[in-house]
Length: 302
Image: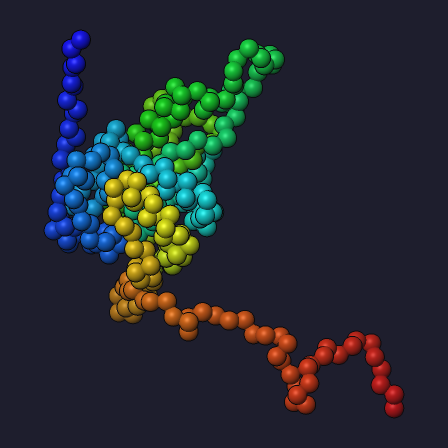
């Protein structure tokens, strides 16, 4: 009996195979540690990689990708999706935007990235019939079938890419979209006006005059040991979110041109900026006794 040995296919070489490739990548260098890539890690899955500033922007909707499933699960576990400002909501979908400094956006697979999840959809896509439901059919909801879920994702990605390339100020990051209620058509033409509103809201959200402290608060609520586990499983360098300064913004108004000049500065968190409420029990009168409210309707004797 002959023994046949089939050689395993070797994966393509990892592009960043030295620590020198991580220099000069802006925000990514501040968040990620200096990665030490050993020879056994040089041949890894090309899908398990992180985006850097030198990676080109995606111009084809077929190349749009999302983020790691472990990071999305961590987002739901911590409940940070409710604390994230929603950029748009309509009858087709609702959307959130995570800038590049957010921990969810650090693990994105493309620039920009888009995550499409399915929410509650009406039976028969909102169309009402007089006939009774057919109980032989497994489900009357379109998103319960893989063919319709694929159709929704293609329509959303196609409409998103058209509007993203149409605006030169479109920010890079992760667009978190949850489809609901009504399923769009195959062409997705009715989604383009909604995508335009979503991108415009994302631009306003990331302007320097906006308060971006919610990003630092979200990063501080994530446990670093869980992020380290995700990084090890996906061959990522370790993430240092605690070393990031809080991004705050200040506005200086130029009276001559009547235009606001926005300056973004990094300010560390200090205890002096924390507002404390006055203690009501500590309020006393001149006799060093607690002040009591005067009773109404009490008449003093003469």
